Length: 144
Image 1 (cartoon, rainbow, N blue to C red):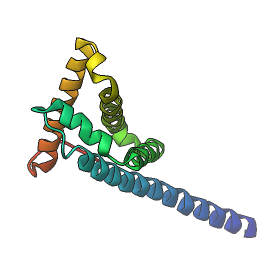
Image 2 (cartoon, helix red, strand yellow):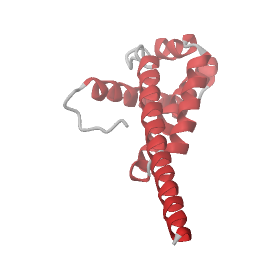
Image 3 (cartoon, helix red, strand yellow):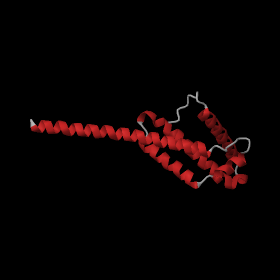
Image 4 (tube, helix red, strand yellow):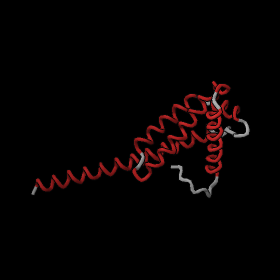
């Protein structure tokens, strides 16, 4: 009888800690997703398709720490994202990689191929659409 009681208590404790760890992971994911979006949308504020060079320059003036923080939040998102939202990780990753690509493209912009410049323009237009959707309170886009 005592053994049965100890086993029941042990299972109960394991159940509680397992449940808590999942909640903690979801909380970490949600917190990191919010931080990522806040950083990302702050960094892209000056991006404008009517002036590509100025847009690329604005990313150069961004503190490298912002890119590092964005990368750190992306890693936390990757490690804590709930299964039901796994497809959103690719969106976070794509936005991060596009910003890095734009930042890296600036230094050698004049020597880039037309295809790469076209890609830059497409990314900038995509970023502008993201900004509009982020500000649109009626948007159906799920950011987190």
